[in-house]
Image (tube, rainbow over the protein chains, first blue to last red):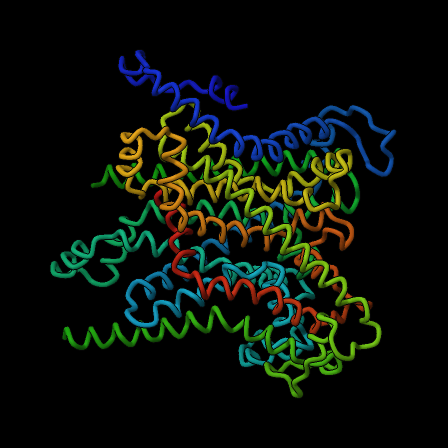
Length: 318
Length: 291
């Protein structure tokens, strides 16, 4: 496997030095490939092979309940999926959840990072408490929030009844938007700490001198934030957004526990799961898997592209 | 003016501190409080935060000590089985993933070899991979290979999905290691392999440990594969078992039981976080920012 990987990649020519590769560097090359081989094999075993399998199966009508009825249908599974309004509804839900949660997390996470950066006391306590939502099982978070929003047993209605749109009878899981709201609250609660820690790492790399210089020059707090701090944290922000957006796009656990997809709260992942595991529609489910995979790729490309453009613009302005 | 600013900053930091604590701990306090509410109290509706009467009944039911509520005789057996599976699967997956990741990260941080860039891109791609897309093919494949509903059936995919994070974290740690020591060992006649084993491993141990914690968290938390690739308590892990804990009446879930189980599975996480918070933060951020 390692040799296959090695021949597959063309290393950039590093000048003439590379040509007279000594025995020592050849040995190093071999050792390097030997050391990465097990990890590469394990990673490919569970992703590449099943993905190829999924592409193959997506071209068949194949239900596990009637395995003999397997027949080649070409791209018709994709056609079925792409013309189904449910697919588009679920994709829309997923995109809404992704955009809203990442945006909210970015704001709250940045505020948390600012506090953690400035704080001089109880650093251990704050680090410990911020890691608890990060470490807690998503299913547990989903239950905690489902019960908090519960009609008969939740404290949310009781505590927030003073808000005009909340009463003791508000049924959060009885209609689409309140249910989506509850799902997003659980997602945001659980993942904001991760965002905050990544942003904190970025924040600590912004030079204090630069911020002070801006302050001396009379920049307001707001100007310092937008003109000095944020532009200098762009790399950290990009990493945080990329990771969280792709993670949010795969949202499954919260929806499974809190609504099981009721009130049209299904996500793309949930739809794929339901087709495959609940309905044994392996052909159709595989088509969904392939589409999901392509969407994630597209998304990753878009985010990287978007931020690169941003970076180039910033450099152009400077 | 400057003094007023400083006071304002101080007050702001204090408020921020309290907000963060409340944000992080309130839902945890809620689930703990709920775990002490009896079934009678939740069945008749109890929207107040704290229990009217505190009871250990839920813990008796899920851990199987004292008098168990009639009708819940098997609950604790299922829960304890799931707990055993979770610990076993997460521990084995962690150990194996960390061994493979350590070898790979050493090579990436230290050695020049063809295909390095490809390995890193592969790890990045897999970290972003939509796990649910694999559920169908894996389900099919695991049934043919008789891996469905077994420990290895979960351990293998958990290794694959934790390797990228572990490789990044570890290669970031390894870049910080003083490599002159390895060269010194090589000058003294050690081979690359000996230099790795005798000099670098002891230096790298803290980083390896951090990667192990992050890997363990992932395996402990994983849900999609856990519900798709298992069918009985022979291999079902806690997150999956919790989601099947619905009880006889879907409109009235066993709040207290679920809350008590949630508390039990959160305890290991809290212990790990309390002991190793500094390491975890370092691991999370080094892998992402520098890697």
